[in-house]
Length: 549
Image (cartoon, helix red, strand yellow):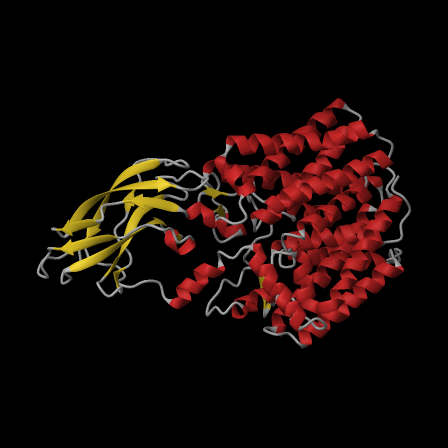
C-alpha cells in the first residue's frame, strides 16, 4: 500500500514542506518515502531476506559516495548544500531498494505498482495539456507545485502539470508513453489494448506540449530500446517498430499545428524570439504632455505575438538626453492592435510622455512583455532612434516617469544569466572540471558559482549546467565515474534478465535509456521525481534476482 501511494505521488511533490520538525522540512513525497523505507526495514528485521546488489554495482556506488563526501569537504561555495544533496540521493537509493524489493516479490505487486505509476502520470499529463491549451487558467494549482506558470520565451505556457519543471514533465511522460505503447502492442485483450493506446496518446500529446527537445530525444531513445526488448522477447522487428509511429505522428502534427512547437524544435534558445523591427519618424516634436507618434512594428521572429493574455506584447520606448543618459526608461505602454504573426507588420499609435525641462530627447523604441522582460534586454535589435524636440514647458506636467534610469548592472547581469544557452553553461562546467578534476566543487554547487566564472555580479541561482554528466563531474570530480559504472552494471543486469515485455526489467531499461539520453541536455540532480525513479530503476538492475516470469 505504501509503495502504491508513493509511486502514484511521484509526479506531484509539493514545493512547500508539509511537516517541519526543527531544521527538518519534508514534503508529501518525502513523508511517504520515509514511511516506505521504514516498512522495508521492518520487513527485513522480521526476517525477510534482503536483496543484495551486484559486486560491480556496489563498488560503483561506494566510489561515488566517497567522492561525494570528499567533494563536500572541499565544496567551493556551500558545503551544506552539497551535504543535503548527498542525503537526498541516499534516501532516494533506499526508497529505490524498497520499491525494487516490492515489485520483484510477485507479479501482482508489480502490476499494482505499475498501474499506480501510470495513473499518477495520467493525471499530471491531463493537467499539463490543460496548461498549454488554456494558458494555465483551467486549474489554479501553481502554489502547490511551482512558483509560477512556466512559459517558452514568454509566448506560450508549457505543459507542466503537477511537476516542477516542463523538462522533467516531458521526461516522465515520455517514459510513461513508451511503457503504455509496449503494453498496447503486447496486451492480449482488446480492452487492455484500447486502454493502453488511449494512455499512450495522452502521454505523447503532453510530451509534445511540454516543448522539451531533450525529452523528445530521450523518448526516441527509450522507444528504440523498447523495440530491442520486444524483439528479444519474441516479437518481430516490424511489429516492434510500430512503437515509433505514434511519437512521429504527434511530433509532426504538433509542429504543423502550432508555430510555437515548430519554433521550439528549431531554436537553440528563445533569444531570437525577441527580434523586432520598428519604422518610426526620424524626428518628431513633442508639443503636449502626451504626444501620439505612429510607428510600424514588424515581428521578425518565428512565433506569434499576442495582444492580450499570456505573453502579451506592448510597444514602448526609453528616453535619453542629449548626453546619452536615460531620463525615463519605463516609457508608456501601447498595446498591439491584434495578434501579430511572424513577418507581419502593424501600425501602432504610441503615446510618448514628454519630459519637461529638456530641449531635445532621443527616443529608443522597444517592446515589452509586462512583468517579464524588455525585448532589447534579450535581443539587441538594430532599430534607429527618433530625435524629439520638446515644446512642453516645465510648468506643464506629464503623466510622470516611473523610473528615470536604465537597468542597473545587477539587473542586467541577472537578465543576461537567464539568456545563456547550453554552450555557455557547458563551457563554464568544463572550466570548473579542469580547475578541480579530483574533488569537484561540491554537489549542487554549480548554480551557486557559474555567474562568478562569467564575470557577473548577480545571476539566477536556479540554473544548473544543463547536462547530467557535466553536473556529476563538476560536483564530485573523477569519482563521478562510480555512478556511471553502477548504471552500466544495472543495464547489463536488466538486459540479461528481461524475458517478457511487461516486466520490471523492461520498465527499468526504458527509464535508464531515457535518462541516459536526456542527461546529455539536462541535469536532474535537484529534482525529486527523477532521482527516485532513476534510483528505483538502477536498483532493479543491480539486485541479484531471477528473470521476471
